Image (tube, rainbow over all chains, first blue to last red; front, side, top):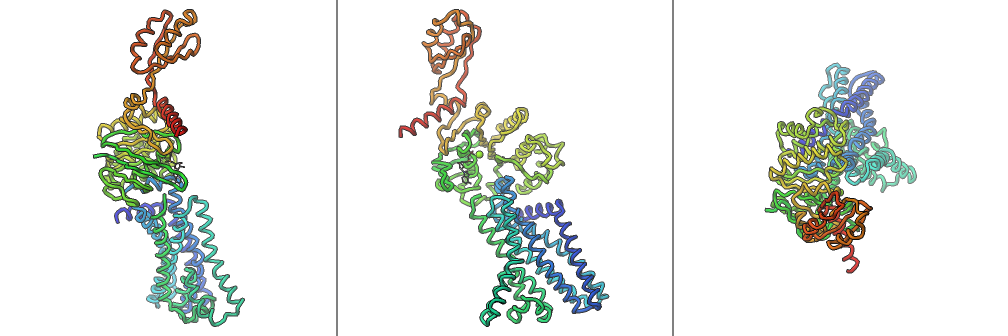
Length: 277
Length: 310
Ligand SMILES: Nc1ncnc2c1ncn2[C@@H]1O[C@H](COP(=O)(O)OP(=O)(O)O)[C@@H](O)[C@H]1O
Ligand SMILES: [Mg+2]
């Protein structure tokens, strides 16, 4: 446990040192506050609808951003140390491979979490200020769920990055692979699904299966959690919202997102433990 | 108790048999030089001892504990220091931060980290980033981290490769102080001459096989390599007579008119020197014991010969 904590701490310090944390926080805060402010201004009134619109817009934005950031943070975790020759040294210390990987993962996740928390915490503050003090409970619950789901979402892609990093021999290849993963989940997956639906006109069998196919993409799961939270009306505007209609509730989806958060990193650990260094 | 013991160890990577039936026992407190060309299997042997990889077959015991595949138990690893072949460390961190990170993992005190940095002469640059360090400074930082927690076993993979002579000399001094503290040290090199006078015993690896172990004297005696006697003088005037005299003791190699070398069996060395000292035009006489280089070449050629015969 102590060893894991030492690795987490060192990873976190690196995050402060190389300004990852600062940069990400500013990035998130700019986007979050920008959308919250613009959302309030355009809709002209403050309240439930406005909060829903704001959060769903923020969710669709970070649905692109967080995977990219998580992959960039994580692809380097093992292959970077392998390439610079510190991996052997580190593992000669009283530190198992599992402890090393968990420590790095938690450190990276904490970096991501701090940036999300501060960035979107500011947005939550702005919303409360706009709401003039009413609806505080709802705003904080909404942002609480948003921050939680965004962190699990980040964990999913960090885990995927770690799988890449454990298997890679060269950093550059790992980076390429990470970008491919981003492209697949963020762009290709939904397009392919759309193509199938358009091609067949959506027969009844597909209507049953496709909501569950969506669960295979954490990007969709994350978006849906934050869409369906505001009732079916809010989600129906989007493809995935319409497809998911009635199949699973947001809480079950949050559970799925949790699985997405822990399964990839577990696979990375399993793989790391049985590989030759 | 043996510091390190390898019994019937094989290690195979895909096609390559990196280590072939290694049996080696290193008593506690011994300084062992592990010698071999590139690809001989030195680094692989170290990784096995450190528990970083598992042997294909055979067993390994380190400080009394059996190595189990995939396990690096806390109580054992804290007693081992490792200086890897390529020491890059973390360029973005300062020397102190590197020592803090590794030192915490080994549960050392802040005081020791500071003291070690000073011991290797990095005190003044402790707060500078490692990427600004020279090759020699990095190597010293590598040594400092290897010494964290007062290890009972120190494993150094080609530690002086790329060091300038002064840095290497400082390095040897630090190793000498450790010898007196009864630390078991395994130290690999392909710069053979540097190891000879600084280790208690040597082990010679050739293509994954251990082809000789023991003290330098034991190996010399067993192999019976000749010593070289170098004569200098104005031999032109004396001519064939000198050559004939020299040939009575061993193989003669006339370098030029002024220099002759004779390879003499160790047992005949004193008699030969006494007799040859009487040569009239002699100006200098030198006796040179067989170097590790020569030993190594000899063992290798023997090995190749027996491989051909087999
Ligand atoms: N991870 C590995 N995968 C495949 N072959 C390896 C690996 N590590 C070492 N080898 C091979 O094993 C042999 C011994 O290598 P090594 O122990 O690094 O030698 P040395 O340190 O004496 O130069 C070499 O032929 C090398 O190519
Ligand atoms: Mg090597």
